[in-house]
Image (cartoon, rainbow, N blue to C red):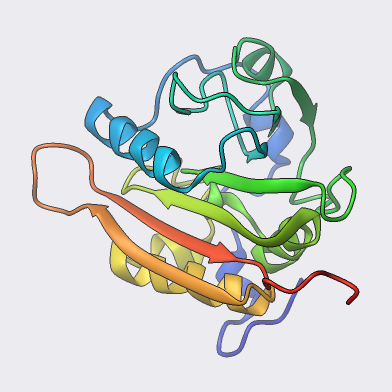
Length: 214
């Protein structure tokens, strides 16, 4: 467990402590946010993802919410259910891995142009370790886009996440990213609370713009 100032290890405990692979063994061909929030995520990706880039979609499923008109060199999907990933038409590659058991990504250093974590960061038990791996595989000045709403599987979300609300959850992700050595972090509400659709927040971290190893 990567230490974070002011947060004890119990902050990342779960009500359901069984292996996550068991919880996700059966595919769920559903979306976890409503259509308006999905459209907002797609617009976010349309703005921030590099055309023709290599995209890593972490904690993915049978949909990636990528703009239909956008073409990418590769979309590498990660998740815990092979059937969900196999049904995702945007993925050019996929791999199944429990990041809570093994955070090391099977990807080369500086090989990815952007990374996505959509409504999944709340399930990471050592988020800094995972995000340091994300930083490693990203090219310089690349973005990781972490989006979340007010929905989750509560028994699988970590304790600190369940104790906080949306703006404070965004600040928590900011803390994760800064300790994972992202050079800049931007957080904001994409779809504010109190409307007719699911609220949506985005936290975007960027790697150092300098060439690694220079």
